[in-house]
Image 1 (tube, rainbow, N blue to C red):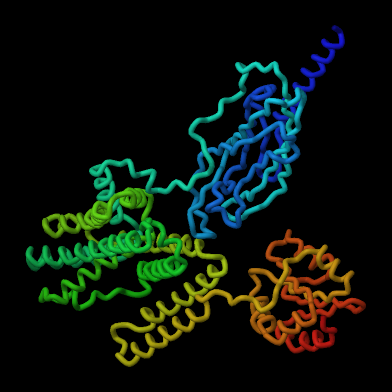
Image 2 (cartoon, rainbow, N blue to C red; image 1 turned 30 degrees about the vertical axis):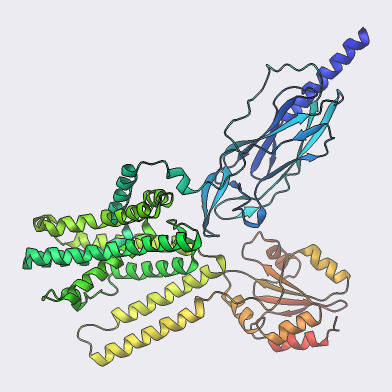
Length: 591
């Protein structure tokens, strides 16, 4: 009897220790996690679950969906390591993911952030022996913020499942959620598909109305209002006609969107999602550069002359065409500044038949055109517009800075290999725009205007060819700096070429162009089986930065070092050392 009591006490104490272990929190990098069992024990033939709780530091997240996670680096939990056959785990029950727009990838992803729990339900085989079974729950995945991603070694959570015939089913520590499933690919359309037709159309109208207050549209608003005022002074008929033409241009843009939606659905089986355009690097670059130019206009570096087709007094068909073109431009400019309500209206349209979807998209255009239709139909309202003054100039310049912020936001969403080129081209384009508008004036001769502006266009085109295509693929198979890899190569007698560089180093970029872009040098590096190391010293705490000073005793970059077994390191601190490097590489034996 005493033995039975002692054995029972031992089992209870062991179970208590196991429960204590499962409740102990562990922190790896920016993630804290721990496991919790649903019951203190599990019965043969019964069911239970393990809850794995996560706490992430602020502004960090796991990728949730394997369908959208880059490189397959979504969060994974594998409870099948180290367990016996007495336990069978079902599919994990995941929490609901959150949408997150990854600017570096230019697309929306599903993520887990903050505090969340993943449930691992399991069943126990009916013939399971009454003992404790250890389970290792392996955790893998990338954890990311807005500026970087890390892949920590989380290892696994170890927990012991006590199997006994005496289980109190009333002592559950948690209940399994009913509506939780694996990370889904829920679309924006499915979230808004339940809206009624009238609610959705009102939402679409309000979305279009809101486009008129977007900063991106403001550069053309003074021109629009000025023309409306001048037309109202001439006659009500002309005011209505020109206003109608402008509204037609707005609607034409949305008609193009509706047409694109029809083509995508009928011929390609896809729906037009608002925001897809921001996943296109070409669109992002074009809109960001357009916003930079409009910001320069708001700063007064150049003026936008109203085309004669709009400014003409005759009200001819040309004038109507110009007004419609201005409306189309205003609609285009609204796209970079659009926000959630417009996405919601488009999302509802996605889930509808083509006819209703087209109506919803056109309703957005009607909402945007409505204020101009009212102003032209009731010209007396134009008399209540604020009088021009110093405040207007300050307001314009303020909007210019807002446009620059939006432009930088769009450029930041570009792939990293094109982002720097876009910024350089934006500066070059700004200089060319300044030439166009600032180097000539109304008093300048026609010849001078033509010469200056042709030169500005040539410079802009040349800058585009230089910066916009992005960096060319490297001819050399560079490896990242790793002291252990370099040491191993040296022990094997393999030559090593280290190029110390930094993102902020312009001279380093020159070295890349005039030395390491040479085909003969790249060919020799491959022929001689040279380990090529690109040592990044952008930040002072990078391993390559520390090695540059403490191991190689070099004060700064650029510097290239060739390590050959049995020889002193050969160093080049200059820029044009290509021939010297080629000569040294030719002395090496071929692999």
